Structures are given as C-alpha cells and as structure tokens.
Image (cartoon, rainbow over all chains, first blue to last red; front, side, top):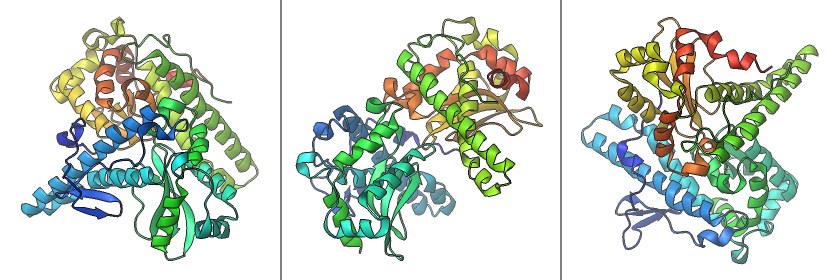
Amino acid sequence: MPIRLPTTSLRTAGQAVRGARPASVVGGITFARGKATLPDLSYDYGALEPFISGKIMELHHKGHHQTYVNGLNSALEAIADAKAKGNDMQAAAVAPLLNFHGGGHTNHTLFWENLAPNNKGGGGEPEGSLKGAIEKDFGSFATLKKQVNTALAGIQGSGWVWLALDKTAGTLQVITRPNQDPVIGNMIPLLGIDAWEHAYYLQYQNRKAEYFENIWNVVNWKTVAKRLEKAA
Amino acid sequence: MPYTLPKLPYAYDALEPSISKQIMELHHSKHHQTYITNLNKALETSATALSQGNLADHAAQLSAIRFNGGGHINHSLFWQNLCPASSADAKPETAAPTLHAAIASTWGSLDKFKAAFTAELLGIQGSGWGWLVKEKGTGLLRIVTLANQEAVVVGDTPILGVDMWEHAYYLQYLNGKAAYVENIWKIINWKTCEARFVGGRDDAFVALKANM
C-alpha cells in the first residue's frame, strides 16, 4: 500500500523549530525542545562549487532536508498521540513515515558533515589509520573509489551509497540503501553519497556519472576518519 | 530484435507551460534512451548466457531487464497519455466519455479521483510512478503506485501513468512536486486513456510493439 504523508508534512515551507541552542546532540542529529531541527552547514552554500552548485546546496539543505525534518517531527507527534491513546496499531502505522523522514534527516546530516570545500579539508585522499583500513580491505583507495562509483551507478531509483564499518567483522564495506533507509544495526556509516536525483540534477542532469566522479573533490576525509575512530 | 526509442506524438515544447521543453527533451532523448540501451544490452547478455546453458549469468541479468524494461514500458505509455493542453484530447468529458463515467461512478467525480490520485503520487517515497489501472477480472478502476521502474505488466491494464521520478519535473519545479502534479492534469491525453480503458492490455501496449 502506498503511504500517504500527513498534510502537516506536506507544508514544506514552514520554518524549523529552533531553540536558542540545541537541547541535546545525538550522533550529529540536533534536537531542540524535543524536536528535530535543521542543522546549520559548516560552510556556505556556494563553497562546494564547481563540484556541487550553490543552488543545489541551498535547495537540498533548506528545501529537501527541511522537509525530512518536518516529516520526522510529524511522525514523532503522531506516534506520541497514538501512545497517549494506547493505540498501538495507530503508532505502528506511522513506522514507514518515521523510517523515511527519520532516515532522510539522519542521512543528510551525515552527508553535510562528510563534505567540505577544498580550503576546509575537502578532497585529497584519506590519511593515517583510515588510509590503512581502506588499503587493508579494498587494496587501494582507487579500488574503493571505483567500487563506490559502481554502486552509485547501479542504484535503481533513489538511494545512497555508504562506506560503512561492519562492526562484527571489523571490516570496511561499500553498501547501498534505497530511498532514505538509514544505515543501522551492525553497520556504522562513515561516508555517505546521496544518489537521489535532487542531489545533482540541476547541474548534471542525466550525466550522473560526472557528479559521482566530481564529488570526491569535496569529501571531508577528516570527518570519515573521526567516525571510524569513534566506532572502532 | 532490439528495442528503439519511440517518437513523441508532439514536439518537445508542446506541453509547455506544464512541462518545459528542456525537461521533455532530456527525459525522452536521454533518460528513456538509456533505459532502452541498457535493456537491449541486458537482453542480449542474458540470451547469450541462456544459449550457452549458463543459468547463473542469465539470472544475473534479470534485475536489469526488469528495471530497464520497466523504464521503457513506463515511458512509452507515459508519452502517449500526455498531449498539449490545447488539444481536444485533453478534455475528459468529450475525449473519454466511457472512462469519465466509470471514474465518476467509482470516486464520485473526476475531481475526487484527481484528489485521490494526487495524494497517492505525493506519498511516493523515492522514485516511482502512479497509475490508474483497470483491474484484471473485475474490470474495476484502481489507483496503484509502483516503486522505481516497476511496471503494470501482470494482468491489469495501465490506463494513465504519471512519472514521479525527480528527473520528470526537477528542472522546472525543483522541490515543489505538488505543483508539477497539479499542472500535469492539464495535459492528460484522455483519448488515449479511453482507448486503453475500453480496449485492453494489447491496446495499451500498442506503441511498444510498433517500436521494435
């Protein structure tokens, strides 16, 4: 059955509910007064040019990501309402929306942080223990890049490709997730690349391979290394 | 026999202002063409593998055939169920009297059907399509949504399809997909929809057969 968005989450123009400062920070996700909020970018919308245009960044952050934040808050409210009424079925019915919008919020938050302009550490190649782990599990950085780009090109529809740590195996893996499914469980997300058309279409149109090639110029390897360090 | 890109029954700019010329040109000459190119490649690879008795290599192509074959089918049907807003075919009451009556009897009115269909289209999570179909067996009208390039190929007859992939509207509507859906109602080719409804699956897929 298709899922209908509650009308509140379709009102995308609404501003983020923001407190003076976030009440808590959970894995990079900020909440204020119990509500998810749109995180600020640590760089300007135009900072990733010419690889990702300022217009894409602005729409992607202020438009799309905001919609996921709104949808997540609507889903959480609907679940709280159902819980207050003791209506388990009603709460369970919200699960697809929670997964979609919660995943969208999480994925985009991780994505902004694992990108950076060249003058703020974006681009280049992984260093230190991250480089060692990549060489151990993929043979070389070039092989990892190739594997990620093949995975990106192979997505049928909308989705993400992640470099993730398999916690039990202790190895790095390239994995894909459809739509906004978040990376959870045994997998720890280290580097995410958004393969939704809205992530590149205004600049690259149907030439998505060019976007997948160019985005490596703005990958923030310091963030990726920090995530690996924290997870290991 | 390889599949080829069907010609559009109108010019790239003919659906303006509902859908821009740039979108139509990219959507038809690039996106649709890519599905056809990859479909032909997958069909050839799987046929070769099968002829060599290599079931594993044959099976490995099935996902690509389903995806790219669905993409070719969906887009072929989509172009045919659109037309310029000024066309007589865009008027549901006169161009699709039988279908119009069936819609009214099912949903109460054409407007109520449009509202229901719109809600389903906007509820799609990720890429996909919305279809009005005639259900096999009952002949009843149903609204279905399908993910990615899944296609209405088993039993039911596709009557009217709307592409909800971002490439179908993004250059013009950006993140405002509700406006895209609102405007697409002005360019529905109801004559095509009527022919599919009063006919059957063979009538719906006639454009596909003409382009092999």
